[in-house]
Image 1: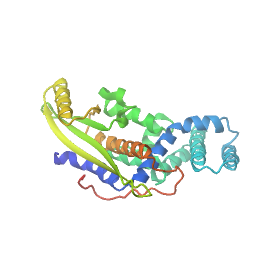
Image 2: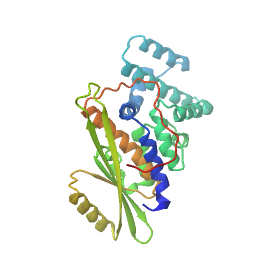
Image 3: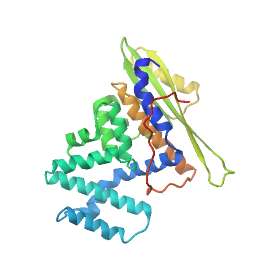
Image 4: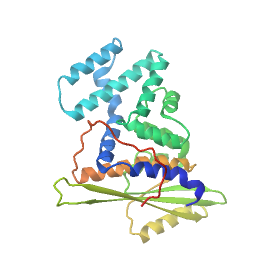
Length: 282
């Protein structure tokens, strides 16, 4: 890879390598929950008398269940309702404070999104202020695709589902870089705990010519490697590669964990996300 492109993507690589399969699975479930919190907020916390009313409703709901996933869902809806309430009342300070708290909370999926956004030179707070709401992960993807990958906007809702993702970045002199992201899993069936090991591999290739010619070369390359299903995202800037890698890896690890029936309740204390320098993907 070109040195000028290494740093951004490898920052995301190192970030992902610090997560265990269980943490990936938990984050995967939390991302799905985060996409549901507007609906949960509408169902349980709409038309509050004041902010105290929002919290009082949460207390009553939590008293009725001990299920960790359900309690986490209710807490997420409460958070979304609170942030919407601050915005509706024009309380800019509390709105910003709540978003910053999500950016720093290691048990929140927004912590991972915030990391990805720093690779793009922006922040969760900036994005939410621009759109006057707490963006769900899927909403954020759509907005970012509009800005950084408009040619692939239709793929914004499905790129994470593909077992192989190809991110194509235009380079000077009619050249393109194609970063291939692969995932694989292994499970020790003899281990009663069913420990899952998820591995990610990245390969890069460089192509010249028109977009159609590059697409044909990528197709030929996937056929040579017996890859039957893959997705392509064409980005306008290499900074977007790191964000896509973060989102894709968590989705892939979570899907593999569900496939192998690895338990991972949403309710947990902390996900350790190490702040270390980028390394090489093994």
